[in-house]
Image (tube, rainbow, N blue to C red):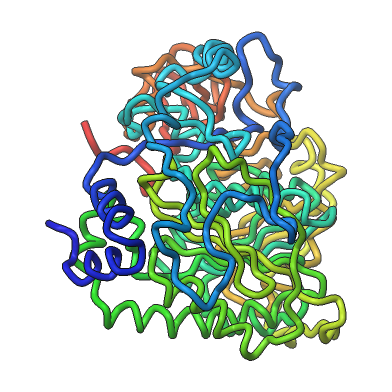
Length: 528
């Protein structure tokens, strides 16, 4: 399907003929493929498991030219009342020039990671994300056991920029609200960013999409996420509760035109207006939930000004002096990002003919420390979590490497663990909101013994001495992931942790010569 005619007309009018045509041509080209590695599960060849780190390394420092206001001088218009024109955009850099070369440092890193991730054709790093990588080609992720083990997330490169915007702007033990979270790419990025002392509350209003989000969070395995399924207003009632609120707003999807043909079919000017109205409502609730001094990060995957700068302008009309700048954001001009400003918001536009990624818009600002600081939490409506008894706690302790850092409880008949610093926050959320998953699901206790939940296999804090480990060869691992029969040889009698390249995939129970495959039916590979 060709690009929508009205979209093309607007693009040529706003960007100018030359720039507009370049963008439209880029939207007809092939999309680059990128992933983000899970730092707690990936390590270079020769490294030991103890070398894994939950928080990623910071990007190398780059001396950045800035404008008089401290903005990186990467082009784009800072006057929010005017539309960008071709003459005001930075000189274009062809995406191929950003994607194809591989410097020696990247080549060395690829060589070290290859034994650990044999199915990923790593090419070069995503420059604004320490764990982001472009791939030479798109592999079949479905048949890569490392993908199912949560070793990496297939995430579009432009969207990985949100981590760059938040890095260094969050306090220790930060609570982050990801208000439009499915399918979970940004959620898992935030979870790695805040570490074990922090908490990410990932919300998705659609129940089906929320289930997909919960599955991706479990595979990532950081144990510091609570997944909720409700409208934005329900979370807005947790007033001044979060250190950062991120809104990846539902939008008209123009930035996905080359990656998703359905985005072209669904686009209309009426839908643009509908999305803009919805974004205004979500931003009001996001602002309510944000603490004074906290960071608001707004993003879309569209080029449409009404949904991008327009949404920020409409917000500033009612938020007024409560919105402040966050401080400079380092952006290398070679990245091709168009930087601008809307009031106190710093804005960042990704055009596919200028950056190696899809169309994306992001903006960041801070809530004034002088804003209303009264924290309000909705009144508890029910008690969902119950404590575990001493005998049960003793059994749970032996399954974790650092049980003293965790707090335990039960929801129904399933035992859970949460990091101590955020356990009470999770309890508060669960008493008010529909929480469909949080922390680490440990499993169920039968006759004093834990039957482990599949989620426990993905948790790096699993004590490998608590259960025999069965390392499967590639083809056998795929049989396991299809929920087919696997050979009993190599498995100990009773419960086993199933691994590939030392990464947990799930559990299986050997009973004599037979093996019960306990991989979740909902996650199994359907393709042959």
